[in-house]
Length: 98
Image (cartoon, rainbow, N blue to C red):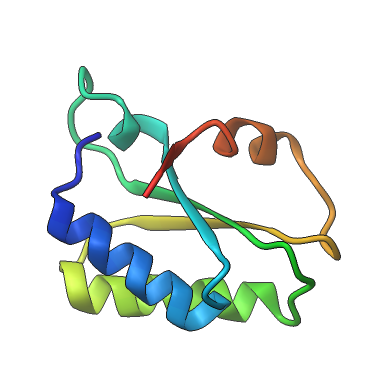
C-alpha cells in the first residue's frame, strides 16, 4: 500500500466523520499496489445503511482530503443498500481495508 500510516488515518477519520462510524474504507487501484508508481488515491466507502446525496458526501470527502493531504487526485466510490451497483464496485470491494 502506497500510503503512509498517517495518510491512512486521516482518510479513515474524515470518511467516518462524513459517512458515519460504521463506514468501511478501502484503498484500491494503483496506490494499493506497491510495485506501481504515481496514481491518484482511489477510495471505496462501504455502508450498511442507505445514504442520501452520496455524490455530495463524496465531494465533501474529496475536498476535505485535498485540504488535509495536499492537492492531488482523489476518487471516491460509495456503496450503500439504496445505490445501484456497477462493475467498478466489484473491483473496488477487493481493495485494502484502511
